[in-house]
Image (tube, rainbow, N blue to C red; front, side):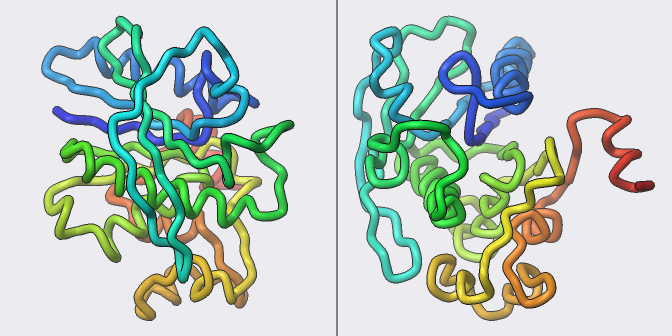
Length: 226
């Protein structure tokens, strides 16, 4: 089975919390199952780019459409990992590679991770890696199942998407205009993304994904019965 794991962080390369730990353990565990072919895609943050431990090679580059924008996307292949997981980094200095400090908290985080979500799908297509399953995580990749079903089905006709909630406190809220200005989704997706007149990316993922999970059974119960 071909599995693409998409996340905004993953140890040991970059980590801010529990998501990073899961993204260190989960791909390796999946790769140990006979017959699985696993790739992990992460943003190419400045902290990764400047770390000499991580040697990469550029395998392809193109432009990703985001609303009216055409943004550069480079796909970098990590060299030397030996646990059966192939890691790729999405390179874009404007959104990731030239920004110092924390990986979250910029005023344009919504736009940054909208770009990342779409660039991941563009990258999988460019690599001719058509996964059986895409596993994506939290609000930063919540637009993956949305874009997959709204705009990328021709490229990935049989791919299924699993969306995992790690922290429901952060849902990826944006102003209502974000739908047209940044996402540029077909109009019939507006209702699925809308919550109280604003865009809620996690809501979109919950509606678009084939399967929604949480990091534990306990957390699932907490979300169902607050």
